[in-house]
Length: 76
Image (cartoon, helix red, strand yellow):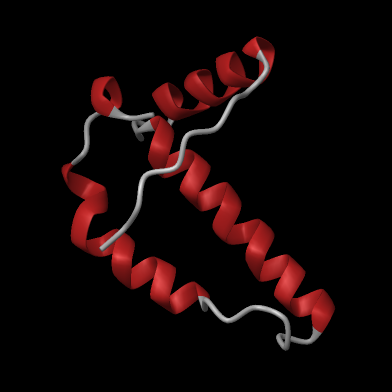
């Protein structure tokens, strides 16, 4: 089951995240999850895939069970 994570963002960065999420009709959590997935994909490619035990497929599969049900007002 996915776990919640609390992060602190500078106000200007959070404003940008919220603006993009609103423009794309996505939740804040969905946008941050996508950004992190892309970062992890890039990191894994640079490292040859040997240093990460959690695959993108696992993240995607976990998200599909909870992702679409959240709303922008309930996201973190």
